[in-house]
Image 1 (spheres, rainbow, N blue to C red):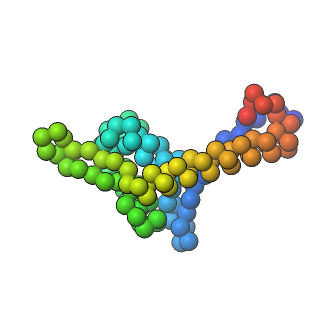
Image 2: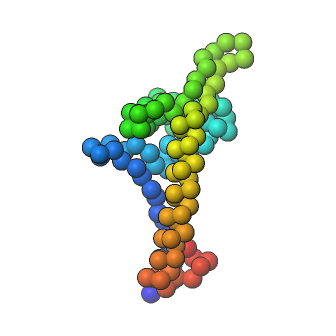
Length: 120
């Protein structure tokens, strides 16, 4: 079998009507909001337009029926953003689920494609 094969797996969650609600892009965006305390800074760190970041967040909010961000506008200390409790829980569940799926998939990948552990 080809020894240069590698597994690249992504998990995306969709609504019943096939609207993309959550995946690696928004997960990264939300992790960066946690890090930078700002949606604008998080988007910039990903070379993403601020308007696109808001669109992604609003889509997730629509699909999951809850707010993802708690925002504070301008002022003396500037604005900022933080994840809501719902977003924090969703992000943690998504990260854990992805880790478990990745582990299972890596085992099955080795089984079916006879690839060594250093190549997955």
